[in-house]
Image 1: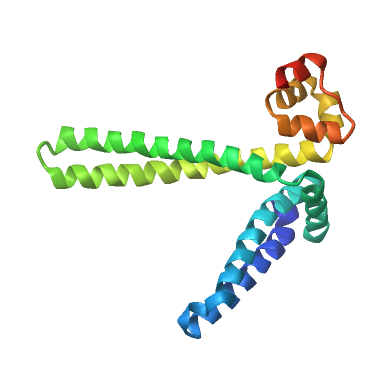
Image 2: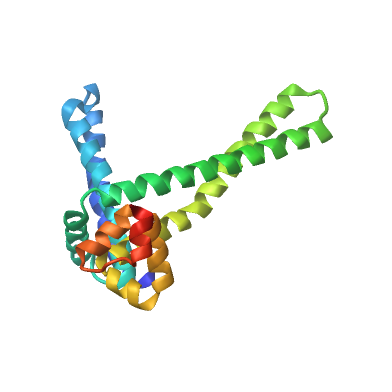
Length: 201
């Protein structure tokens, strides 16, 4: 983290500048109109882009500008693959966080039933407190998993041949399960094993 702190700060500064401009437009009156909406869209795109650029910074130790160029090339070479990857992993992680919140809410209900039987106010308060605490605790833990997904995607998209050579079992699983990963490997000249191609057909 300390070796890439400047790159992380620089990438975050760009988002902060957009947020500041948007806040000034809103303070000017009428919510900023179309300009504020446009800046919000650019800010969201920049946040999404930064996630992959920061992965490049962490993996390769390059500056933010070099990582941004590499990320742009990654998007140009793989198109919507990153969006598909993000949508699927994001849904699974969100479901995990909601499940954690539900379990914590149930624990809150059991505590209210044990210590405050018949008191509906305490029951509702403990259920909501348990859900919120459980949800955000799971979100904090699952951010690590989300970062791992992004890092695996970046490494595989950059050099699938290295994965095929150094970790053939992991390569077989990635290309055997995901048509997107198989397509990325084929674009780089790496062919999946015949049984994997049969499974994907």
